[in-house]
Amino acid sequence: MLPGSISRRAGCFWWRLLGLVALLAEGQGQEAAAAERLSPYFGTKSRYETVNPHLLREPLSLGPPQPGFPLPPASCTPLQLHAVIRHGTRFPTRGQIKKLARLHSLVGQRNGSCPASEALDGWAMWYREEMDGLLAKRGRYDMSKLARRLAARFPGLLASQRRFVFISSHKSRCVNSSEAFRDGLYRALHGQQQQQQQQQAPTLESNPAMLGDIKINDTLMRFFDLCEKFVRDVENNKEAMHELDDFKTGSEMKKVIERIADKLCLQADQLNADLVQVAFFTCSFELAIKNISSPWCLLFSEEDALVLEYLNDLKQYWKRGYGYDINSRASCVLFQDIVRNLDQAVAESKNSKPISSPAVLQFGHAETLQPLLALMGYFKDDKRLKANNYRKHTNRKFRSGRIVPYAANLVFILYHCDQVESSKEEYKVQILLNEKLLEFPWSKKTVISLANLKNRYKDVLQKCHFTDVCDLPQNTTAAA
Image (cartoon, rainbow, N blue to C red; front, side, top):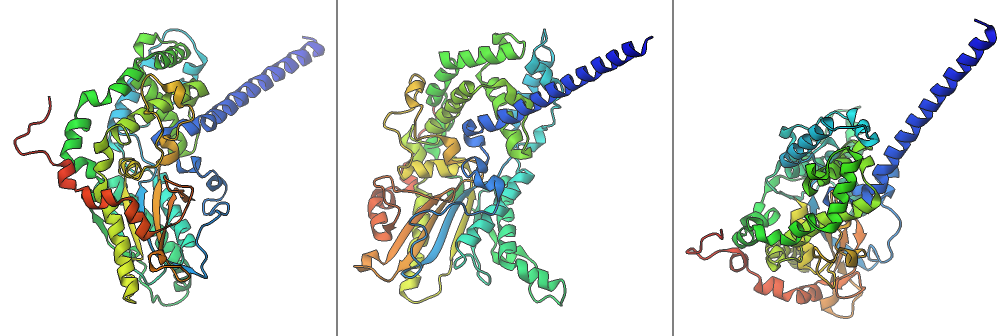
């Protein structure tokens, strides 16, 4: 063989190799871009950084300054922090894992060759049923970092040598979240002392539990389970989710199913809304849990994602939000507990006593926060979310991913203020959602006196009794 021929063949080989590398790199780039592009639409499966993107760069950053927060320290002193916190990033539930296993099997049995299916050939089904909603390692990270940021925001309240109230749902993901938060808070408060102890005899017990015991209280954190009328009329009532069911079989969802089936070399009748949704959720889980872009993400366009976001929001709206009054009214018991703690701090302040609970930290679920926010009137659209008005709700307020992502937190800050015109203005309240100052639903204001807050929610505080709202008459049987 002539030397020139060998040279030409070698050159051809290297050009092909470089082309293959370029294609692989392009595919990886598309995959990475897909997850970030879709992340605003993951609903309740959203990572916390989606609503606070600056945390991707600096996990302990307090973000840009917020006008009006906190209140001027020269005249107003924080007395108490009361936080209702959703657990951190979790694994899929057993039901979601079963659906994903079924879909993965279908993809493996396809006929034909499709780029999206081929990308999934290299994806191993690593989720196991025993993971069933457990807190992921990333979830502990979420909680630890949140604790440290709150300690930095409120050093006078979250201070060493003080004990705090920790309350949790019985679910392990919430208990583990409260433990991780407490560990992070301990590091924030005692980190320097711990470093000093490494070089001298210890004087401080290295035990985060010294900050406070974790108590289980499902009456507050899982009120929905204990509300008999909610369980009968919504949870166990198949007709209650008819708007969701109608959207699953409607034209918008059918188009998404057809597009995904085509990308997977499957027939449209082999898929349904639940299977397509679990593929979408898998993209979200892998971004939240592993901080990676899954090949499942490549299946979806932004148009698909908007439809699937609405599907998730319909469920949240009708089961946890404004769909039925019982959804939010069941949370009265939690709102009353929050105000009761604020009142206790005020009473102690007026009597010149130390605040016994400078921080009340409660760990629950998206299903804990969403009804509470609805009870307070937040994120309410003029028109109800329905199966037939998807196009009218492109700019809706009710977007669960922006309200209750993993590690979502609703924080009430009680202040004692000196320079006020009347005694009713002496104690003021601000509310943060996901570390951002909230305006009150009835105004553009971000601060209110506790007296006015209680007056605004007088009906909730005085007329919303859990037994009246939730208990079924003893002779009433569950609906069929």
